[in-house]
Length: 114
Length: 112
Image 1 (cartoon, each protein chain N blue to C red):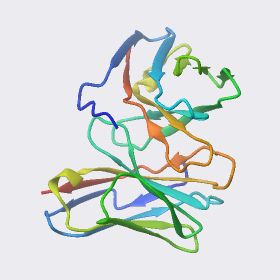
Image 2: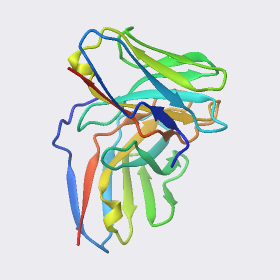
Image 3: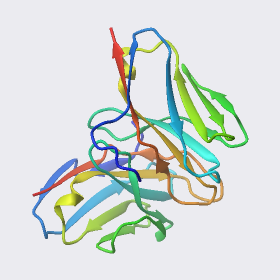
Image 4: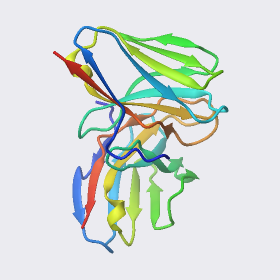
């Protein structure tokens, strides 16, 4: 186990609804990244939070937004859900800063949009 | 990233044999590389990493080789076991950048 926990594990939403996914980072890690993994593909970077600020964003529309809290846990919010948003959403944490460090992933939240 | 759909490259090996999984990375500026193992229904699990100032790194039963000239990364797994069955992803990163860029993944199947 990595110490990165995500909730919920599974979720079903209707097209047009909004969803919030949660992530608790590993102890000692101040950086959280979110990834979307469609079935049969590698994870795609959504954005990263470092010390409560967005610190980089991938090619995702503004309806994907996030937060990081003082305890370094994080939320991913998706508005106006579309069918193509159905995927495994992964949270990864690491110790940010200048030096690259290994990122540890949670088990993911499986989102199904119907 | 490139869409692979459900047709992941696959590798089948006999239990006890050695496995070699290959990955071509995309960015010549990448200087940090990681191999992840992903079992069904789980998140990627860190296996081993390597920085661009090295060409080989060994872990427990695993070895990563990096060839920067041809932008190629490989993962060698010694004496494969049934528990090694999973999808394996390579990921690359540029120093100072935020994101990991994942390769397409390879499904490894261990035959008894």
